[in-house]
Length: 507
Image (tube, rainbow, N blue to C red; front, side):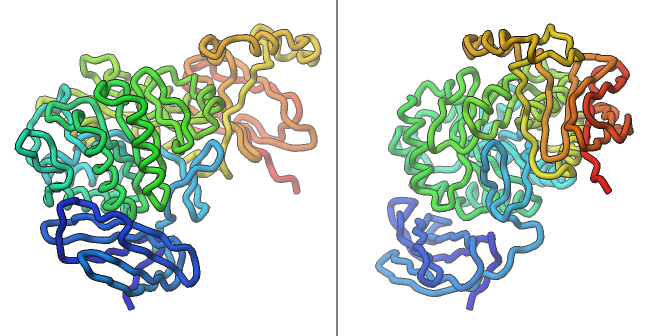
């Protein structure tokens, strides 16, 4: 009997061909008397279709395939998961986790067009990822035309029709074979492939595809890549810029992915100015915004995990979105995390060969990645998941040492906040403490402010330890221990400081 491991793809190749690149709902997988899982076959290469299936339970699986006039049946055995394989990333409330329950915190990066580069450069990108902290990568399916990325691709996903439009049913073997290998390689590194399905930076006509062709393309993506455990669906990069698509189109695309993907991979939409409205097919919020303080509002308003996938890039190019200093970038990362979200990296350092990580991959030259690694390691060491804290009740002008602060306040500030429109709250957020809190710990980040003292109220009857973290120097030193009740900690009055409070176990 054929064998595979839990969360590892099982594949069957079937010789034959048909005009369409997808044979819809032709295969059924079932375990014992369990529910049937229906998947589609796809053209893998000339003259060969394939069926791919992702087993998510151990034991014997049976299958039936009806294709090209053939009825194919068989079975395979699914054994335990391999080391480091945890299944699909899923959402739970406002955070992520692997389906086996393991902790997952997205610390991603952006390499838009790396699969369109030379084999040598693609290999170099994979090598860089293997030693980095990144566990997610934003990457395009279609080629991109933008500054620092204007070369003509050697390969395209599809062949052209006589009128020059793309024929989504005539797939190019070399392109898809390479993408298969790269997505699988990312999976072996523990990197989620956040596949961007559409984008506006196009001179080849992919953005002009009609709705029917777009839906057929999405069906092909689900059939070919749905059985990879490390795939996410991103409907678009900067969806509003695709003026050839309507909101009805985008909703149709999201619904199609939700309805045809039997494994329910994560789905989101990336914006440039206007955030996509909440939809029932959205698993999380993918946002572009340098106003990182608003992560707290988005998390509350959407009730979903929030990833600020583009808040600017560390680099030195002429465009303002691509010339953040390393400290600015790290500060934004910490702010996103302290507000209850997750950050995504990008790097845009000018090079004479125009090989910028953000577009083509290759090597990293900046200083932010090791500091993201430091933050990621810290969060993984803390138990469970943190939740960003709101303090709307707290008047920023009030003496926080006043023991009667809540009574004296008389809820006047809270009433003001309640009647303040959402669009006007952003400025107030920056005046509220940046605190991420979990079970038995609190992480407070001070950003660019330089306070000489931090005050807090800890539960009576417990004991806590305080540590000072320098987010740039990546140092951590003890400030005090055996803390309880109202505390006041002296700080160095320096930007880029954080304080970690952890509850001590009483003997």
